[in-house]
Image 1 (cartoon, rainbow, N blue to C red):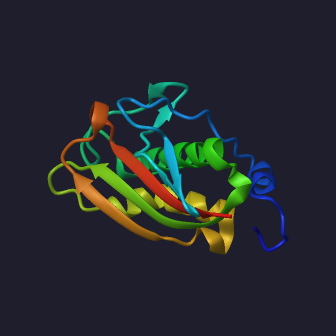
Image 2: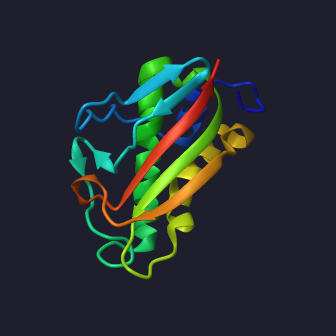
Length: 156
């Protein structure tokens, strides 16, 4: 919970953030799975209202700044998957985020791109949003998406 002992859902309201609907799986998987006190999300693309909002490689067709905003969208989609499974207010802390960045040759700014998601988790969860992370450059992502984020959270 936040230092003021408010529910995370209240914090989202304070920030003017609305969790989107869960993105429907694109293949044979589920959006999130709970085992014990951990929830693992599937990789989330920057999909809004059922549509991929950008395509291409970061450092070529997509700027690093735009990709950072897309990573934030991926983070919101990951939180929506957590919320649909266990409720956002059951989150104890964000444990790990993994970001995949479809990178043009020579692009090395993956950490800054994935900060779009990491910063979101900090805004919402404060100290409980501090997490371990990997930011990985890849040659291709599903549907030619520029970025994908997956999340592990601890829940009560």
